[in-house]
Length: 326
Image 1: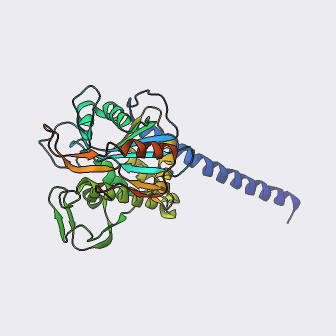
Image 2: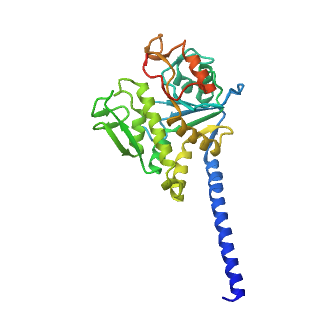
Image 3: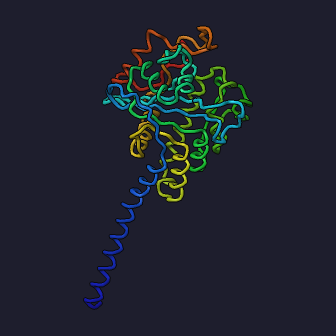
């Protein structure tokens, strides 16, 4: 091959390599900028003094206006899902379900159920209430509408979820959530069924405890599905996933797509063998203080220590809380 032709071939190869490098670098960067632009923000954080580690407060917001749930009577927003994700400076990460009916002191209001703080004052009041309850300062607030749950699950091609008969009676036919599950076992479900799975509690004798377990299972299933090569290496699926997730996503000011990526990694770690999941210590699932109906009463003696140990990474990995005495 003539020397001149070799030089031209070498330049072409170099040009192709450069273009490929530009595409490899530019695609994720461009995707990140695009995703950041789609996230809605809310002034949710309290400005309280920082506590050790990184603390995320996650909620599933039910506005009854996003089309995911048919309800013409409920006005305003509610939250059926309240999760606290703590990543300590050292030690295992913890993903803790805070039952929505937990009886708490709500700053500036009468004591009531935890999700009443969201109904009365939105994200800012919920953040302050959770901080007062746990002693942890929330660094990132993340809220996803129920329509977003459906969209994310469908964007990853469905997720595998499981139900067993240790507590539930089959077939499960929960009219309130719409969940229909014929027999114990696992199956791949679409977004509509995944949402019903996460919301179901009336057919579960453990109520919010069982619902919290299913919500954590769904989150784990979604994060695993997102991390598969079929999603990570598929640009169309990446776009669909980001579009579905961010369209119903609201975060605190300053929380961006990089923080969301860190959150996803912490979720996976908390749900793995080296992580912590569960609920705070519960004293009663049917505490009736008067005026607010049946509530969940956390153990006043054990709960402060529980959150302090999570903050400092001192708890051993495992599943905590659950039914009183467990």
